[in-house]
Image (tube, rainbow, N blue to C red; front, side):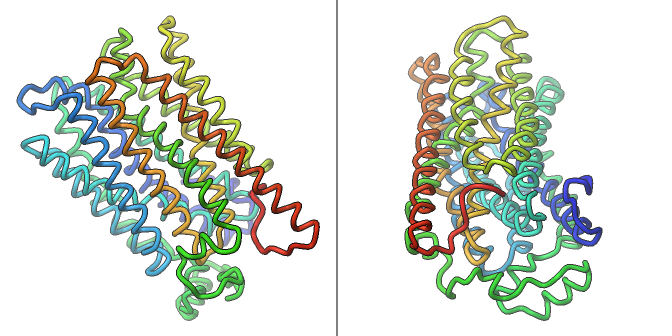
Length: 448
């Protein structure tokens, strides 16, 4: 359970915030396990002559899975703003759990790719929905930290995936690891169905006052005023709100940043063990690097979340992406093993939390009526980068140019740094317009 000191509020508010973050953490843990398991078992799959997977088809399968995540993120974001956070979380959990089992029994690469596409739809829809719900229950001044805490689950799942690979691959094969991915159907889904509360702000924004009042009485929470929950926005399509007034510039820059960030995240997550093997490390060390980079990711979430609550998620993400570029590029140098572990850990600290702070900024900027849609489309558009990253890695290996891999991935971090700098400039111009009398009801990009 999440310690209540993270919430720093009255006991009733702390109780429900702890409940929401804990249940979402469990869901995202299994999400991360299912996502990272492909990269963890990929070297063993490539070495399975009966399965017949090539480096090129491995990249294609990785891209198919992330394309499914794109579809899941885009559709779940809008569905969540219409039917509620809880229902979408449950549906996504069921979809990716069943699909993981199908991966474990797939007879060929085509069937396996189809199952990964279905799993991707569930995985892609779950994360933006969980972020939106946590953002709405997070106490003031703790939103970025709690989103960071939530995202530690993703990397705990990555650590579990690499650990399972180390323990099970040699004796039981890669299929066993995918079959373990069915567990959320029997563990997480029942807990969410029984205990997860719906968003109070969502219920009020949809006019479901009676349901909101019951939930408010159950947890001793104040009801948000209808005008607060709708953030003063007219009842129009939540997607259209992303481009209202001058918000289109912010939306576009968030999308570009997410494209570059997820290209980097999924490209490195999928191909890190194989890239490190191409540098001369053995399979055990290559899988250990995946474990270490996710350990760095967990540390980075706590550090970035705390700093972002003070200085703003955009500033932190900008610096973090610049440091990611330097650390990922440096992985191409064959250093002593101990130094390489330190460098991989440092890359994890900056790599994953940089993208998470982009999500935190989106959760802060957009109102309740379009928040899940904004996060969903930011992650969804970013999935184009996530599709391209694994595919690009496969092409580099297929053409014998894998030595360029870390340099190309580092370039995407440089691009993300540039788009965030542009985003900061847009925010500054809007603040200057406010000072000169141009009124706006948009939240600032700074702060939590």
